[in-house]
Length: 421
Ligand code: NAD
Image (cartoon, rainbow, N blue to C red; front, side, top):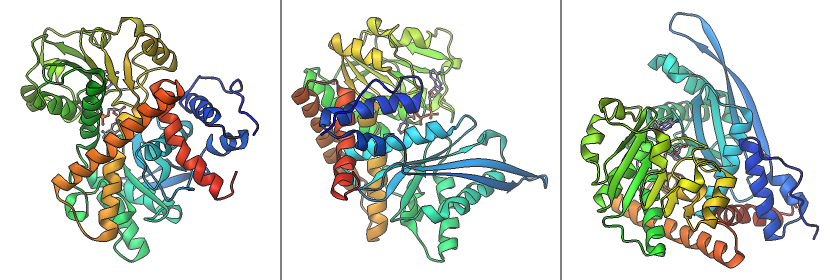
């Protein structure tokens, strides 16, 4: 088998940096160069133009994307984000990450992702509905419960999923709840979907702490970002007996070595996940990351832990709730320093896992209790954690590369069996 060369891709943007690790993972697993050629980009990428009648009678035309990374394992799955900075490369990279997450938690899916270039805060409720429906009409030929299943992502929520479901069901002329996940419970949504990512991160923290022999009760936790992922997570850690000593949002951070009152902060936070502006004694996000603590959870934005601040991080465990918070160089520095990292593609896989449960329930027409969903989530994520740790230890690689190796292997094997490579 011909080996894969690593020198041809530079680490300079989200797609390229993902491709670098995919290449390294496939090389370590012994796949030929052709496998990398197949998996470095989505097999299908659709760009659409969506005309929307605005409330004032004018028409605005929006650009949308849908990337389907690889469908060798089964239908593809991934969220749709509404953001003014959405780019083709970002959507492509995120679709690859979805393949990795699905592979790591062993779901019968390949990865996908979608996006619309829009600032949703500038649109009225009805304009948002028309845009959501227009997107579904534009991509309807390539999506469906056995083809490609969308879900929420940045700035999209259960209401938007409900409009998208309704539009798809009208086009197909039958109810089709398995077309999309993250729906309201009355339309076939699943229990736990809303908090699934934070639940998953909580399980990862517990498993990592167990592995390092750090008791969770009393462990000092710092969480960067107090939005959907970070705030629920802070609450779950607080409830588990850990001491959440630091939290932050885009405006700054709060620190109390005795532990913050998370319930009070949750009450005060707004829907954008901001709360620190209400306080005088704040610290910067930069200071927050370097606080003395046992467990650090970046749950905000990408590129927060870099080669510059990695030597000063005091945490023993970093669990990445955010996508891409740690650079490759920082990962190397931290791993050398003995810091245990649970990488994003593993740590935040709780969301897609409960999305899978939602799809299964829709296909069966039989719905599970909250306890059943939580028990199944626990089982899936504990197994995924131990598979990635086993890969890291048996192959002598860092946790990020191990997660990519576990994640890409299923799709690579399925592609090989199908005779594609
Ligand atoms: P969110 O918008 O609800 O919250 C983001 C939080 O980060 C807010 O508190 C915001 O103030 C803060 N923030 C924004 N920019 C910041 C900056 N430059 N410095 C410090 N803080 C900043 O978002 P979310 O849904 O909680 O997602 C957070 C991260 O988790 C993202 O990377 C997202 O991709 C990832 N993630 C989320 C989910 C999910 O289900 N919510 C699933 C997988 C991954």
